[in-house]
Amino acid sequence: MPPPSTRRPRPPPRPPRASCAKLPAASCAALAAALALAACARIEGPLERAARSLCTSHACLRLAASLARAARPAAAAAPLERSLAAAAAREALARGEAAAALEAVQTAIELSEAGVRGGGGEREAAAALHLLKGRVLEALPPRRCAAGSCPEHAANAYRTALQLSPGLAEAAAALDAVSATLRGASAAYVRSLFDEYAARFDESLHRLEYQAPALVGRALAAVLSRREGGLPVERVLDAGCGTGLSGLELRQLAVHLAGVDLSAGMIARARERTGLYDALKQSELVEYLVDVQQGSTRFDAIVCADVLNYFADLTSVLRAVAGSLVRGGLLAFTLEASPLEPDSAVEWQWKALPSGRYAHNVEWVVSLAAQAGLQLVQRTPVPKLRLDGGRAVPGNLIILSKREALENSEASVHI
Image 1 (cartoon, rainbow, N blue to C red):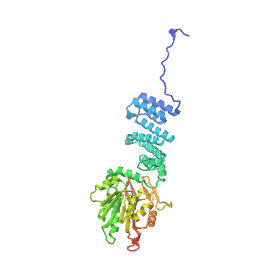
Image 2 (image 1 turned 30 degrees about the vertical axis):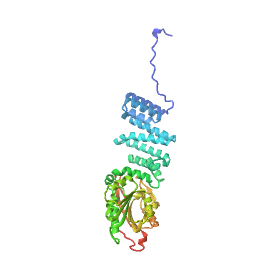
Image 3 (image 1 turned 180 degrees about the vertical axis):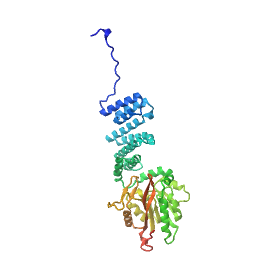
């Protein structure tokens, strides 16, 4: 042993290193990158990208986020906070804790919103979060969600993902799969959607070059004016009246114009159009028509402009309409065209669209209507009902007549 005067001084003790014993190797490497990142206070740049690409476990992300918060303002740590919340959602979902996963993924989505507004790769990251949200919603019991079923909300999450990243094949496949389980939008979902939409509805549809009310109004006027008695007819129902855009086209056709809509917000906006409607009621359409049939009132015409595309199977609504029309009464409505080719050999009735609406096979609808006692008067292809994503939405304008009168007088009026 050397004399005391020649001893070398002991090196200072090393600071304790974070334990990686319970972390995967990749996460341990990411932890080291996150530590260096925090020490250098460089949130942006290669170190940050290394941390985000390698640090995937909840434990690692939690430490990385806390270190980033200590080194820089909270806004700079937002990407790590978002990744932390997303990792927590994935782990909760894997444990079968869907409610906790939903809370975590919603936090991640809120943290991503500022980045989405900035564009770039943040849109792809946000799309992945909405895809995850859809998976979480599908894992919840269907009736657990408010304002519609959980599968409906999952479909909406997948649609949002596709809006952010149109090429996200996984979201497209998930949307197709969940849409196949739905048979039309539920009343609760549609009510919530349009209550929220009511305040900006007219302005939005103006931007979308919305054509349905004017097209239906003109076509119905042309058919009614050629009938005995001419215009105006006694009673017309604007079914799914919304804020009254169709009512503006229908007012001159009827002595009494009634409107019905599922959304209280829409009915409130329609009431603001003083003198437009003689009666307004908030109700689900089929329920309203069934109530009509309990009394003596019947309509000379019922209009569904851009309404039936929220139904999948039209059986119940066509039967309810037939029972609510006078003899020879008319049903005028629009349908969105199918993405399938007209000469497709595939037999189909209706198809869920990425928009959340439904396309219908016109031949099937006409056949279904005949079973309900309604006969085709007019079918007109429409190149553009509105815009959707900057593209024209094609469709069909159809007018049907209650068959009883066709056996006695003018059998058909074709325009």
